[in-house]
Image 1: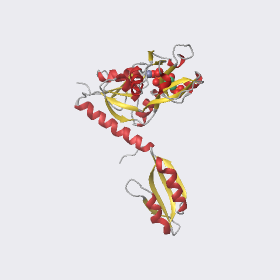
Image 2: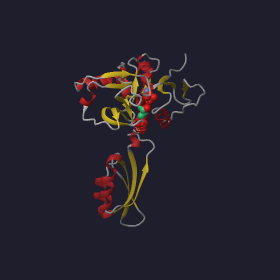
Image 3: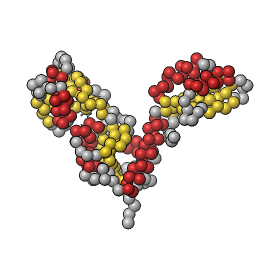
Image 4: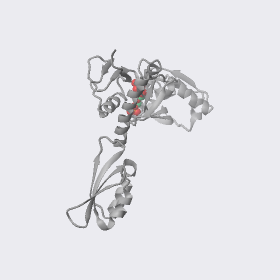
Length: 287
Ligand code: PRP
Ligand code: ZN
């Protein structure tokens, strides 16, 4: 009997591909660069990788062609498939938005009344229209949605926006966001106990990588008379490490800071007399 392997579906090419492979590598999972474009595996983790169009990933996970998958919430919700959302992966967040011609005066959803909107997201678009009690004609196409207004096929589009450059190049502007979409890990609802255990192992690593990205390691020199004050600004994992410096009256303080509070705390530390502040990235973080 062969070893159980977890099958993961990731995007073949496009916005999520590199981020997905990088995340696995940051989790210490070697991905073999095979010539086979459909499938490869890891040399040091029981994982098989399948490369699919992102829009197809929820279906393949529901049907157990793959056990888990990496996809945007946009395709997960649009597909309406029964899959479990396991974890926000924290990369390649995007927006599903309505976009109109650059010169149009968009003054709210009623602008769309009676108009023709091209999209690959008919379900999510219809929900938005219903919620706003707008009647519009949805023109479902399978790709290159952004060229539809320019060739007279539609008055507006509903599509993914990331940097906004696709819209800009096509003479369009973002008018309204209808979904903020995170990139998530999804799973099939009936995984075997062995596969659930492998998924736990993978998730443990993903969470360590994510935490590390959100935190920085900080080292600084503190005058002893302000040590307690400085320590009170530093959360640390348990509490900060304090070591005496060779120079009397000074200590070296080490701690971990959350990215979000970073600048505010640095300001406070400086005004409490901290010197020689070093901030370094953390590769992995296990609590
Ligand atoms: C989306 C969308 C645009 C592009 C927008 O495609 O359809 O082509 O990304 O990005 P920008 O704002 O940075 O220019 P997606 O990544 O979902 O791939 P797909 O439509 O090929 O599946
Ligand atoms: Zn797609």
